[in-house]
Image (spheres, helix red, strand yellow):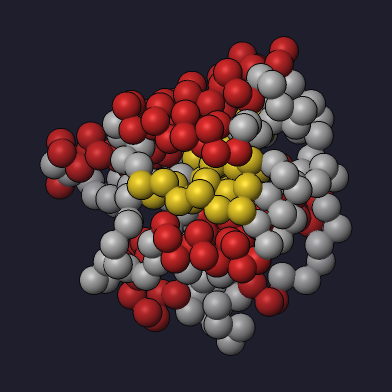
Length: 273
């Protein structure tokens, strides 16, 4: 296990949910966290901002640099990278967590929504990875972690929400391609996906409060992400990992504490058999 103390980590979509949980987990090691997201001012329906998470990171023992960024905009992403290096001197890890979701059929998906998912999911993963690459090449244990699923070509994962599936599979294609491309530099590129639904703002939107009872908390994804990025980058790359399965491989046996409601049955996430 490689310590994250003094390591610089950029997490997109870090204002809440899984991104926030990963940031706080890494902060406890004394890492430098770039809390990147669109939410600067409090949102009427969503909890958390980049500034509120930055304060939590500092309280947890890390150093925080909140950056308001729209990952669809190349100029903003490049500015984020430049400011990160000016602030912390290096970049060691990128977590592509920002995402957009619309579980709609082809006929019911406006092209504006299609473009949003492609731009935030697939394109931003490519863009952010490209932008940090020169700096990752200088790191001793560089990682890119994409929050995207294993590619399962069973038509059932395509027929009901093709646009969303395409955008998430595009992220995983980035994982597979970049892992091979960047291997000579010792840069690990992996994907991580939850075995069960995770209690996030997206679940609130899709399933409501009752749906959250059938979820796990974001902390299971944070623990799995931490286990991945603290592994020697030359020994773990090009993998599409499932949170529970990966943690079990690392000796974790009890998962009860991750349940949002211990008395409810968990629901599997999309793309997981």
